[in-house]
Length: 611
Image (cartoon, rainbow, N blue to C red; front, side):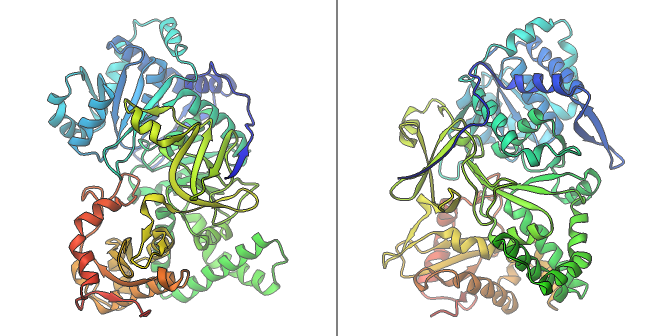
């Protein structure tokens, strides 16, 4: 087996728990701004470290007064907002354990997460969240307390704990040691019933302390590091970053409404971002289509090609030709500076995870002065296992192992992880726990490859590998990711298991569709159903597929595709909360369309130029 290990940079402290991260931050910088809250006029109101700590303690006292006992589990269903992290730390200070529930969860999912975990209380954000919870509340007799953020219940709860002594909170916050459970996070359920991942205090503490050193340039900006969180904090990716920011003293703002993201970036002016690749694709595609609409499409495309060429030359380490430098300087004034300004003007780094970004976008943003640090991990690894570093980065990879983490490849290429970040077990599921470990090594189910320097590249999911009738193994991601980068494409699912050739199911991006149609002289009011049959749209999707086919062998190439007249969403049951496709569900729901690709193609289906 090939194995790479990065030694820890910070000595382990088995007695520490997550509350120590905040207590230490208060001692270090009590008056620094730790959070900024959005105001009605579009500005931001500061919350210092000392103020946050005081609010955490008051809310913890309220939980104690309400009867929450050490070890009790509390459900939380809320969008990304300041109160999410406030509740998180308050629960830890009260000795309790948070069980996040995605704000998009159905009543059945709410029932499973709360019932399986044994939660005794529930905190909800909105009336809609309450309605979904209330539908299954009769099936959850253990839930004895329910609070709603939008009704001001947190303030009432904090006020109710005024008689609880400081000593009681100090006692409770010190009960847990590193090996104790810190949170119970349920997997998104893309491959069946969600499993509860038991993450420990040590997972958070040791990973935060080591990551803060490894990512020093990102989280310890000399002028003050800051980030605007917009992906859901119920997911471990944003949850870990939230805790890391408290530990490192990073100023954090929140904006859950992605339609308000650009204005918020402009006013908040973060120094780094946390996002999934789809966000970077969207920013690029929107900019491209705006340029097309303004008659400046050729300039934008030339600028993009120059950016990629410039960054590629930079990474190669050779001398950049004078002509390329001059073109880059010109486009920096015309194009790149405007894109930087749209993201607030101060973004130097972006941490990207959950799916491959692709070298082209990586180089494009790098040329803008934004280094995208791709990383890799799962809920079971407390988010990151590997990540590119500011001083040690390779575009197109997910970086080396983080300090305190070991990564190896099994004989079949499966990525396995052990170290400070690996979860303890699946909640009440010893069979699943045993099946996913090989000794200390967690079997991720992902397939990857190392280069000679230990930089990891993800090539696919073990369970998603397609084996054609001819015996060819095909990793869907190698085809899907470049096609999805096209502005017209919403999602793509490659199919062909035990079939004579590879095909694809395509959905269109409903936001980009009218813009693209208008820019290409077509009816911008065309419905998704109509567009799925449009020769112009079919030709554009064909171009995206042909470009992806150039990167694979003939046996792996997509020969046919069909554009579905719908959108894959969480509500439709086809996407997880982190926007990953539920492949098995899609294959079941569209089995007739898949069979149609292999039993004779109707006129509305596309055919690759490869025959």
